[in-house]
Length: 329
Image 1 (cartoon, rainbow, N blue to C red):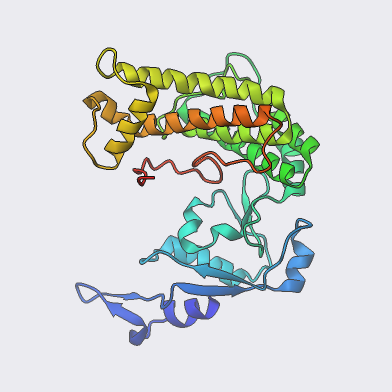
Image 2: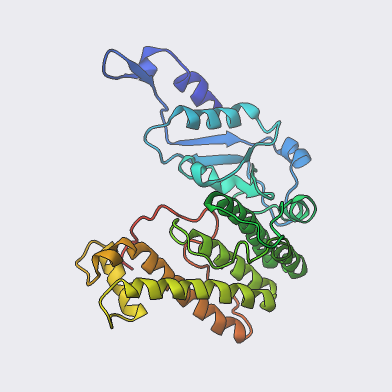
């Protein structure tokens, strides 16, 4: 990639440029598939890997964008020129997906480090120490502290990190550490200030994060905490569905019927929803799905827990909050 940026995109040679309107021209990025070599000796000295990691010899990027802007070029140029000499961190991987970089980024607490390992979402030792020894929660544990929407979003990021790290620890049978991660959050954030179950205007984003946290509690074996989270999230989702039903005709649909009509509407077909219900079609869809998942988990874990737990829709890494219409199942 270094040569592509230097010899093509960074060149002023007319043969490497395309004409635009008003006698202007633009530089080209000649391919959507590039690779970044890995200095194996250097990364083994400077990066802490998980015992089960497989280090790759190059990062293979499949760039999905048709137009690469300057902010994208800045990221690619920084990575290409750095040559693994200094650590590179990102606060989110969502913006990196179209550059093909997300699969090489790994959580170490609240930030993601670029590493030459594919699909390794968490650096378990570093993330565990950061959460247990370095995370601060302000006054979140004090009764009566008010969190507005923006501060709830920030506390959601913290809760999400606890959940992701706990899930990763459980996956390698470090369930005692996984439980400690979750219990620390539960102790440090007063649920009267920030409940696990709470309606939000971001496509049920708050509850989606709690669903991930709940899954982590189940997998770690902390059934007491799981019950607490489950009751809170279920109560909020049931209240949402009750509200959405009230927007229709009196004596109207059941939750399942309302869900099916919302799904029909979201797929651009005629549906028996009132105009007020149409506004909440996406939330009806997500709330019902999440309630179904909660019920499924209750049955599975009461029976001793499944061998492979199903991930709740859109709740893990960088959940989708765009509100896009779902495809017909």
